Image (cartoon, rainbow, N blue to C red; front, top):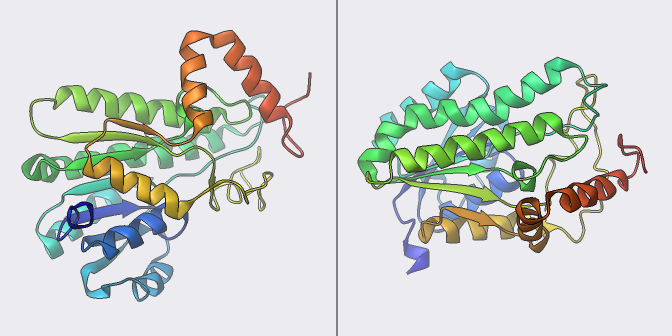
Length: 274
């Protein structure tokens, strides 16, 4: 039954050229969905499309989610080709690694434009179609959306904002059949840390963490599919994510102390050890 849940459903995935987005697009395609892959690099999307189980059921749309017109075009192209929208996965995002005292404000703006406004734009234009289909909208956040991560002010702010936005949207449409899921994978083996922005806005270029024991993007995609098929409101995937959420509300000072110590231990961390 679970494999049939996505059959012929139209699913948009932003940030679909790598990591969780690509893994999700592949999984949905393997389960018979019509998949719309959105990212900034069209050539790469077209190449990946040919590796999908059913390339004829995959649409690639060049999209920079930080641009309102690109998001509007994404939704219009989807409806023009497939006629409906059943699921919108707001996955596109970037991270950062710098103390706020040192960071260029353009870095914070870029994170908010991509992570938060990208989610708002795509959801706004897709919402009429999702209400019609009684479909699902997903926002991919992080444990950083529950507790501020030092050295990640813009990232945490954007993820808090997404969680607040989608939680409110769920309440507004609680009687309309709309499913809204806040999805927090935790640390995942992907390229988001490689492309994280430093204080001056340049990409980090390498991950500071050992990703060999992290959850794979493919496993994250499987859990996303589970959450969608069971219409979950919220999913935190890792034990540390669930513990973080609990202690954030139960013992906030202790939680902050733990976060500081953990982030300060990263190689070449911008956080000073105390």
